[in-house]
Image (cartoon, rainbow, N blue to C red; front, top):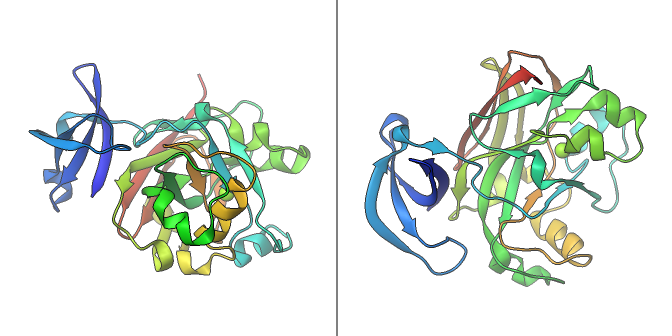
Length: 258
Ligand code: MG
Protein backbone atom coordinates (compact mmCIF):
# COMPACT_ATOMS: atom_id res chain seq x y z
CA UNK A 1 0.00 0.00 0.00
CA UNK A 2 1.16 3.54 -0.79
CA UNK A 3 0.40 5.89 2.12
CA UNK A 4 0.57 9.62 1.56
CA UNK A 5 0.21 12.52 3.98
CA UNK A 6 -1.52 15.54 2.59
CA UNK A 7 -3.44 18.70 3.33
CA UNK A 8 -6.85 19.54 2.01
CA UNK A 9 -8.92 22.59 2.99
CA UNK A 10 -6.52 23.32 5.84
CA UNK A 11 -6.75 19.81 7.33
CA UNK A 12 -3.93 17.26 7.41
CA UNK A 13 -4.70 13.60 6.79
CA UNK A 14 -3.18 10.34 5.64
CA UNK A 15 -4.56 8.50 2.65
CA UNK A 16 -4.01 5.30 0.70
CA UNK A 17 -2.98 6.07 -2.87
CA UNK A 18 -5.04 4.17 -5.44
CA UNK A 19 -4.63 3.91 -9.19
CA UNK A 20 -1.86 3.38 -11.71
CA UNK A 21 -2.04 6.35 -14.06
CA UNK A 22 0.05 9.19 -12.54
CA UNK A 23 -2.54 11.82 -13.44
CA UNK A 24 -5.51 9.80 -12.16
CA UNK A 25 -4.39 8.84 -8.65
CA UNK A 26 -6.96 8.94 -5.87
CA UNK A 27 -6.51 9.10 -2.09
CA UNK A 28 -8.74 7.01 0.16
CA UNK A 29 -8.63 8.93 3.44
CA UNK A 30 -7.37 6.94 6.43
CA UNK A 31 -9.24 7.04 9.74
CA UNK A 32 -6.66 7.67 12.42
CA UNK A 33 -2.93 7.27 11.87
CA UNK A 34 -1.29 4.58 9.77
CA UNK A 35 1.17 3.47 12.48
CA UNK A 36 -1.60 1.75 14.46
CA UNK A 37 -4.42 -0.41 13.11
CA UNK A 38 -6.37 1.79 10.77
CA UNK A 39 -9.35 1.72 8.46
CA UNK A 40 -9.88 3.33 5.10
CA UNK A 41 -12.81 5.74 5.29
CA UNK A 42 -13.97 5.14 1.74
CA UNK A 43 -13.96 8.92 1.26
CA UNK A 44 -11.86 9.52 -1.83
CA UNK A 45 -10.22 12.64 -3.19
CA UNK A 46 -8.20 13.05 -6.39
CA UNK A 47 -4.51 13.42 -5.61
CA UNK A 48 -4.42 16.38 -7.98
CA UNK A 49 -6.75 18.28 -5.60
CA UNK A 50 -4.52 18.03 -2.52
CA UNK A 51 -1.08 19.19 -1.52
CA UNK A 52 1.21 16.31 -0.64
CA UNK A 53 3.20 16.81 2.58
CA UNK A 54 6.27 14.96 3.83
CA UNK A 55 4.87 11.41 4.21
CA UNK A 56 5.95 11.32 7.86
CA UNK A 57 7.09 13.86 10.45
CA UNK A 58 10.09 12.10 11.94
CA UNK A 59 11.31 12.69 15.46
CA UNK A 60 14.76 12.10 13.95
CA UNK A 61 16.35 11.25 10.64
CA UNK A 62 19.36 8.97 11.02
CA UNK A 63 21.49 8.99 7.89
CA UNK A 64 24.26 6.56 7.06
CA UNK A 65 27.31 7.71 5.08
CA UNK A 66 29.45 5.96 2.49
CA UNK A 67 27.27 2.91 2.09
CA UNK A 68 27.94 2.47 -1.64
CA UNK A 69 31.60 1.77 -2.49
CA UNK A 70 31.70 3.75 -5.73
CA UNK A 71 30.29 6.83 -4.01
CA UNK A 72 32.84 6.60 -1.19
CA UNK A 73 35.59 6.43 -3.82
CA UNK A 74 34.30 9.32 -5.92
CA UNK A 75 34.79 11.64 -2.94
CA UNK A 76 38.18 10.13 -2.12
CA UNK A 77 37.00 8.32 1.01
CA UNK A 78 37.69 4.83 2.30
CA UNK A 79 34.84 2.37 2.48
CA UNK A 80 34.06 2.12 6.21
CA UNK A 81 34.26 -1.28 7.94
CA UNK A 82 31.25 -0.53 10.09
CA UNK A 83 28.20 1.63 9.35
CA UNK A 84 28.51 5.22 10.51
CA UNK A 85 25.57 7.47 11.18
CA UNK A 86 24.81 11.16 11.48
CA UNK A 87 21.61 13.11 12.12
CA UNK A 88 19.48 15.36 10.01
CA UNK A 89 17.08 17.32 12.24
CA UNK A 90 13.30 17.17 11.92
CA UNK A 91 13.40 20.77 10.66
CA UNK A 92 15.38 19.65 7.59
CA UNK A 93 12.44 17.63 6.29
CA UNK A 94 10.37 18.92 3.36
CA UNK A 95 7.84 17.19 1.16
CA UNK A 96 7.35 16.54 -2.53
CA UNK A 97 7.22 19.76 -4.52
CA UNK A 98 8.62 21.85 -1.67
CA UNK A 99 11.58 24.12 -2.34
CA UNK A 100 15.16 23.23 -1.43
CA UNK A 101 16.48 26.54 -0.16
CA UNK A 102 20.09 27.10 -1.18
CA UNK A 103 21.81 28.09 2.07
CA UNK A 104 23.67 31.41 2.24
CA UNK A 105 26.79 29.83 3.76
CA UNK A 106 27.51 27.39 0.94
CA UNK A 107 28.64 27.64 -2.67
CA UNK A 108 28.58 23.93 -3.41
CA UNK A 109 25.23 22.25 -2.87
CA UNK A 110 25.08 18.56 -3.83
CA UNK A 111 22.25 16.07 -4.35
CA UNK A 112 22.33 12.52 -2.90
CA UNK A 113 19.52 10.14 -3.91
CA UNK A 114 18.76 7.66 -1.13
CA UNK A 115 16.31 4.94 -0.18
CA UNK A 116 14.62 5.99 3.08
CA UNK A 117 13.32 3.42 5.56
CA UNK A 118 10.38 4.53 7.72
CA UNK A 119 10.15 2.98 11.18
CA UNK A 120 6.69 1.72 12.21
CA UNK A 121 6.98 1.01 15.92
CA UNK A 122 8.97 2.04 18.96
CA UNK A 123 11.99 -0.23 19.21
CA UNK A 124 15.46 -0.60 20.66
CA UNK A 125 18.20 -3.25 20.34
CA UNK A 126 16.41 -4.81 17.41
CA UNK A 127 17.75 -8.28 16.58
CA UNK A 128 18.49 -8.87 12.91
CA UNK A 129 15.60 -11.30 12.49
CA UNK A 130 13.12 -8.76 13.89
CA UNK A 131 14.16 -5.82 11.71
CA UNK A 132 11.39 -6.40 9.18
CA UNK A 133 8.83 -6.16 12.02
CA UNK A 134 9.84 -2.60 12.90
CA UNK A 135 9.77 -1.26 9.33
CA UNK A 136 6.63 0.57 8.24
CA UNK A 137 7.74 1.12 4.64
CA UNK A 138 10.01 2.91 2.22
CA UNK A 139 10.17 6.27 0.51
CA UNK A 140 12.56 8.37 -1.59
CA UNK A 141 14.96 10.84 0.00
CA UNK A 142 17.48 13.43 -1.08
CA UNK A 143 20.32 13.90 1.42
CA UNK A 144 21.06 17.43 0.21
CA UNK A 145 24.56 18.40 1.29
CA UNK A 146 26.59 21.60 1.42
CA UNK A 147 29.73 19.81 0.24
CA UNK A 148 32.11 22.72 0.85
CA UNK A 149 30.87 23.05 4.42
CA UNK A 150 31.10 19.28 4.93
CA UNK A 151 34.79 19.44 3.96
CA UNK A 152 35.45 22.40 6.29
CA UNK A 153 33.56 21.29 9.39
CA UNK A 154 34.18 18.08 11.28
CA UNK A 155 30.59 17.62 12.38
CA UNK A 156 28.01 17.78 9.61
CA UNK A 157 25.19 19.50 11.51
CA UNK A 158 25.27 22.56 9.24
CA UNK A 159 26.43 20.82 6.05
CA UNK A 160 23.64 18.25 6.08
CA UNK A 161 21.16 19.60 8.61
CA UNK A 162 20.10 22.98 7.28
CA UNK A 163 16.41 23.70 6.67
CA UNK A 164 15.06 21.90 3.58
CA UNK A 165 18.07 19.55 3.29
CA UNK A 166 15.92 16.42 3.64
CA UNK A 167 13.22 16.11 0.96
CA UNK A 168 11.10 12.98 1.55
CA UNK A 169 8.29 11.44 -0.51
CA UNK A 170 6.15 11.25 -2.48
CA UNK A 171 4.57 8.62 -0.18
CA UNK A 172 5.49 5.51 1.84
CA UNK A 173 5.27 2.15 0.07
CA UNK A 174 4.57 -0.49 2.72
CA UNK A 175 4.71 -3.62 0.52
CA UNK A 176 8.15 -3.70 -1.03
CA UNK A 177 11.22 -5.90 -1.05
CA UNK A 178 13.97 -3.26 -0.86
CA UNK A 179 16.80 -5.68 -1.71
CA UNK A 180 17.46 -4.85 -5.37
CA UNK A 181 15.71 -1.69 -6.59
CA UNK A 182 16.85 0.82 -9.19
CA UNK A 183 17.59 4.18 -7.62
CA UNK A 184 18.16 7.15 -9.86
CA UNK A 185 18.34 10.92 -9.80
CA UNK A 186 17.90 13.50 -12.51
CA UNK A 187 18.60 17.22 -12.57
CA UNK A 188 16.46 19.13 -15.09
CA UNK A 189 15.66 15.77 -16.68
CA UNK A 190 19.30 14.70 -17.17
CA UNK A 191 20.39 11.57 -15.34
CA UNK A 192 23.07 12.14 -12.71
CA UNK A 193 22.88 9.11 -10.41
CA UNK A 194 21.97 5.53 -11.17
CA UNK A 195 22.46 2.55 -8.87
CA UNK A 196 20.80 -0.44 -7.31
CA UNK A 197 20.01 -0.89 -3.64
CA UNK A 198 21.74 -4.29 -3.86
CA UNK A 199 25.04 -2.35 -4.06
CA UNK A 200 24.73 -1.19 -0.44
CA UNK A 201 27.75 -2.24 1.62
CA UNK A 202 25.79 -2.59 4.84
CA UNK A 203 22.26 -3.94 4.45
CA UNK A 204 19.13 -2.33 5.88
CA UNK A 205 19.23 -5.02 8.61
CA UNK A 206 22.83 -4.04 9.46
CA UNK A 207 21.91 -0.36 9.64
CA UNK A 208 18.90 -0.81 11.92
CA UNK A 209 20.75 -3.24 14.20
CA UNK A 210 23.59 -0.71 14.37
CA UNK A 211 21.54 2.39 15.24
CA UNK A 212 19.03 0.66 17.51
CA UNK A 213 21.92 -0.61 19.65
CA UNK A 214 22.43 3.03 20.55
CA UNK A 215 19.01 4.63 20.62
CA UNK A 216 15.27 4.10 20.69
CA UNK A 217 13.61 4.46 17.31
CA UNK A 218 10.10 5.90 17.21
CA UNK A 219 7.24 5.44 14.76
CA UNK A 220 7.86 7.80 11.85
CA UNK A 221 11.62 7.96 12.34
CA UNK A 222 13.52 7.77 9.07
CA UNK A 223 16.74 5.94 8.24
CA UNK A 224 18.66 7.12 5.14
CA UNK A 225 20.68 4.28 3.66
CA UNK A 226 23.40 6.05 1.67
CA UNK A 227 23.74 7.27 -1.90
CA UNK A 228 25.10 5.61 -5.03
CA UNK A 229 27.82 7.24 -7.13
CA UNK A 230 27.18 10.32 -9.26
CA UNK A 231 26.63 13.03 -6.65
CA UNK A 232 27.04 16.51 -8.05
CA UNK A 233 26.04 20.15 -7.93
CA UNK A 234 22.61 21.71 -7.58
CA UNK A 235 22.04 25.29 -8.64
CA UNK A 236 19.26 27.78 -8.02
CA UNK A 237 16.47 27.04 -10.51
CA UNK A 238 17.29 23.34 -10.88
CA UNK A 239 14.58 20.70 -10.64
CA UNK A 240 15.92 17.57 -8.95
CA UNK A 241 14.05 14.25 -8.99
CA UNK A 242 14.78 11.04 -7.08
CA UNK A 243 13.09 7.91 -8.46
CA UNK A 244 13.11 4.49 -6.82
CA UNK A 245 11.64 1.43 -8.47
CA UNK A 246 8.41 0.37 -6.79
CA UNK A 247 8.01 3.64 -4.90
CA UNK A 248 7.75 6.66 -7.19
CA UNK A 249 9.42 9.99 -7.85
CA UNK A 250 10.26 12.79 -5.43
CA UNK A 251 10.69 16.14 -7.20
CA UNK A 252 11.93 19.41 -5.69
CA UNK A 253 13.09 22.73 -7.04
CA UNK A 254 16.12 24.64 -5.77
CA UNK A 255 15.47 28.26 -4.83
CA UNK A 256 17.57 31.03 -3.33
CA UNK A 257 16.95 31.22 0.38
CA UNK A 258 14.83 34.33 0.89
MG1 MG B 1 23.97 10.65 2.13
